[in-house]
Image (cartoon, rainbow, N blue to C red):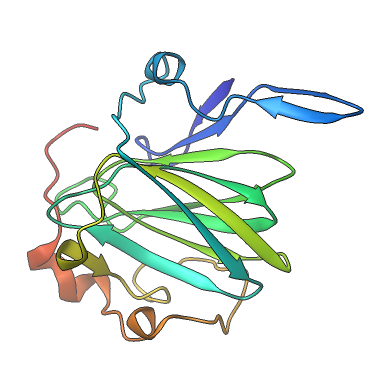
Length: 186
């Protein structure tokens, strides 16, 4: 597998080794030992799958406390996936990275604790899978406005379909007191 560091040093883009022939393909989507060799030592405890239609935007989400690291990929369809550094005091606070993940390119993104995460669906529908190193705690969930002008995320759509929660999410600056603190490393 090929692991690339993004513009945010702790967020990684992973290209798994795919073995294919006329029957289809096989690739290893997770191996604790192999991923640890590339600095991903998270102990994942929960797997989630979501199905969304074209134009849906989910996010930007994080948990604090009970922060979650995530390993995400698309099983079917295509999304534009985004990670935002929301660790107060981080040199990259408020910066974002995005990548197109699809069932065709099989790319994965690793998003460590302390980052907000979201994606929008570019294909007719997308089947999105993610591993988490912490279980879901609804009382700890925070949402950041997907269109916060201070973040300047270049989403490939302008009028997404949002959940009622995401439609009223506050801007990052309004959440500063509740956000995780940067600890001086990954």
